[in-house]
Image (cartoon, rainbow, N blue to C red):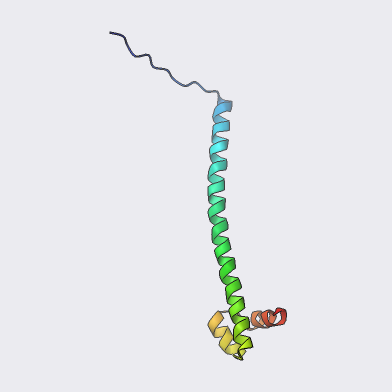
Length: 84
């Protein structure tokens, strides 16, 4: 009965190091994409709040009401309206 020949992969430390680098880069890209998506969502929400603050001011709402509805500070509202 023939015995199955087992082969083992033999790699050098340099090859192992390159494999680890590649895996690290791939993991880094995944994490970076996820963080980028989250940052994009936050930025989008911020910009939407700014638009709403401008619309509220254009509709005649007072600054105190805009502050309470948007969460922006008085200085932020004034800056938004100035840039408006």
